[in-house]
Image 1 (cartoon, rainbow, N blue to C red):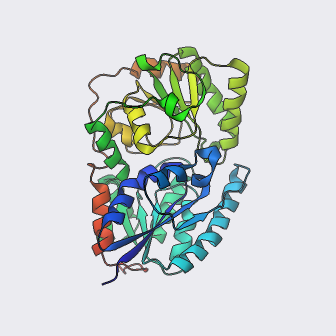
Image 2 (image 1 turned 90 degrees about the vertical axis):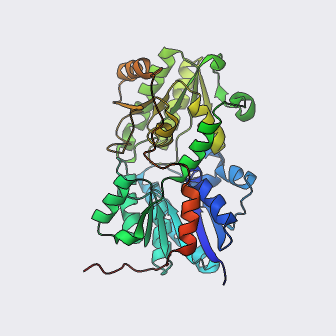
Image 3 (image 1 turned 135 degrees about the horizontal axis):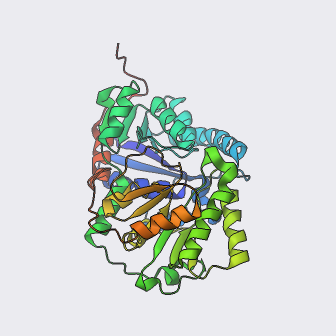
Length: 385
């Protein structure tokens, strides 16, 4: 019996940590052959060149797809997605996978779903059924309706996918593969690297060894015109707190230009003494950095997903994670400098935060590989009436 060819598409920096343990499990499974495509901002230096970490981890990349159009606005997002449909359609035609895996909800993931489903290739969607703000909400649910097999990260998400009309037999709660990485970190939490020495960065964060915070704030694509103003308010709050801070560059979304320009202009004008800016880190290093921080600030899904498992205090800013399932580690605040400062001061050393398994138990990758090896693959919806 020939191995099933499972084609996984990684389009951005966060997607790799969302799927890494599943890639390892697929690669090691005797009945599966991993086909790996790296595309979009995961190939670009300005967003941290995630492809370098993927190759360093020993994965063979079958195809690299360059598809990101400059502009970082809503029109550029739409055109990037259109170009991705064209490029990925050709890649799938040539690789002839038995199934294609699309990950979560970034805007360009809809291109993977269209290119596969329109060519009658069974489509597997990882982490559907969740709710948030941002364009991700629409893309995630569109991926769900295009997909044939749904591997969700929580019971809440499973129930929502079924309510959307999907066959319950095709909706399986595997948990999120990123929690597999978080489990490894929780079992060995000590940080064994110097983030400045290993990754460089721009700025300074003197005294970080005595305690630090982490910031990761992305633009909200449905509010992208306000991106520069929004990031400015967070910068003021963090600068005034004077706590050593590791700050990560935003994703490639509409508004990313405004966020990036806001950071640069603030840095040039005020030269904050406590903030060091990074493009990217290896997934395990990043989670170790989060685990050992006093608090994570911003609007990344890492705050409500991995950080809940790690028991890290989180100050979530704005609407990007609106209505997403979250643990007791998260407090929410609007785009207001004083409110952000107050929330951080009140939450920074929260005690009695325990690990919450909202998004998995740390064995998702193995589950996903087993399902992909054994589950009947189809490229049509089962009739439910």
